[in-house]
Amino acid sequence: MTERETTQEARRLLTEYDTQLREAAELTGATTVTRDGPLWRGTYGERGFVTYRDLDHFTGPALDELITRTITYYATQPAITSFEWKTRGHDLPTDLPDRLTQHGLHAEDPETVMLGEASILAAPVPLPAGVTLRRIDTQPDPMPDLIRAAAAQERAFGVPFSPSDLARRLLDKQDLIEIWVAEVDGEVICTGRLEIVSGTAFAGIWGGGTVPEWRGQGIYRALVAQRAQSALARGARYLHSDSTEFSRPILQRSGLLPITTTTPYIWTRR
Image (cartoon, rainbow, N blue to C red):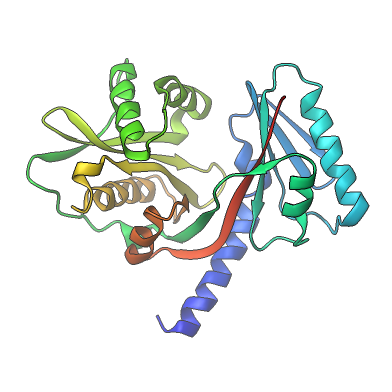
């Protein structure tokens, strides 16, 4: 595509993103969902999550009051230890991040929202000798493989991953989630999830990470292609991902487009 065509396509995809992937679509599996003006607030056990399509012209003191009400909503639930207010780089008002910070929320690292046609990413990618791909969530007891997958994610990202978190995702989203791994000699060296967004044309690719000694050999890209093929088989047209600085270039070379950024703002109970 020309630069102009790429810009037009990115704008079209951003409209699809705002229309299909925000509000209720982000709260699948929530134990409770409530509304406050433009906000959708969900709870997941000890965690809360706040989303919206737009803030409906909330600015200044009215926005401060909306933030305060949201903090109070979660703070008065003893079981809640933290909540995430998910912001996007193209949203208004532009001072929302500053106001969230002033109310005691802290920003995590921003990520790039990548979108595109699943068919672009579905072409098979050659794997190094001895490496195979496998879906691990369809077994009668997936926990042994979930433990191995979580250990590989921990090595890939350098932060703890809990197999029980993966098991909870399977329970919460049931037949809407797939977990894939790349293996060699019985060792998991790369993992990734596919999550179908019910009622939309989208599927998400999440949690992709390759252990350090196997990077640069096309394994992550092959796992993306496998998930794209599965998404297409399940009727999804588009793929989306909130991408780190490491995965974004791979997905962009594969054909997805960066359309905005997203930054989580986190409130934690003191």
